[in-house]
Image (cartoon, rainbow, N blue to C red; front, side):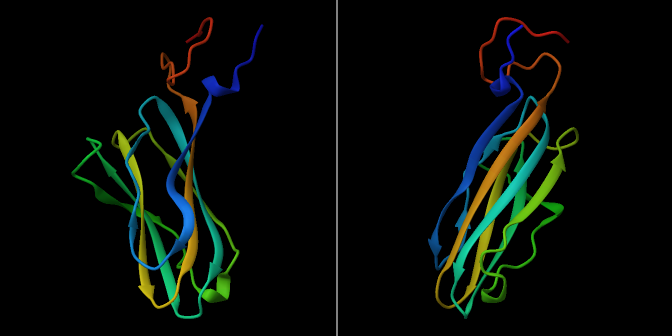
Length: 137
């Protein structure tokens, strides 16, 4: 029997890691077909006057209608926690079809930040955008 890890997980970049001095709004990513999402905020160098607040939003459509997910906010990124990554998990059963990250910038200088999404636990009957020989459900 062949094991295809791609059939069970999917990784997406919500915000590309870079040095930012303005608010960044990620592109919406479909989470349809999965049960769990792990969100990883990677933090690099942060200037002494810069802050970044990363939150998650959801919507029923990819281009509009996004609203903040209650409780899906990470500890504020500042110079005092440079290099300290953050991780959050979301159970997707009651969530909308699309997720995106918003990194709200404050202060002066730059903050190196990126946001990655790891989807797992495909719902029964979901092909997860990958092809494989069979699926038992």
